[in-house]
Length: 66
Image (cartoon, rainbow, N blue to C red):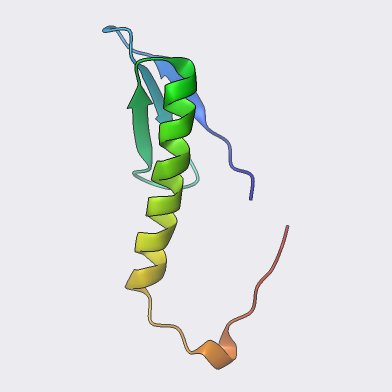
């Protein structure tokens, strides 16, 4: 899966990462690379939480790759 991530440096010097396609999915790091590693963890957590909130009938579930 590929997602767009916006990374900006804040006034304190930290790098803040946001995934626009996943509301509320944010992270940060002291370095650019740390912010990237942290946002990857945040994306995984966001997806796990959202999937656990839904009760889906497995017979109606399909997987689609784009």
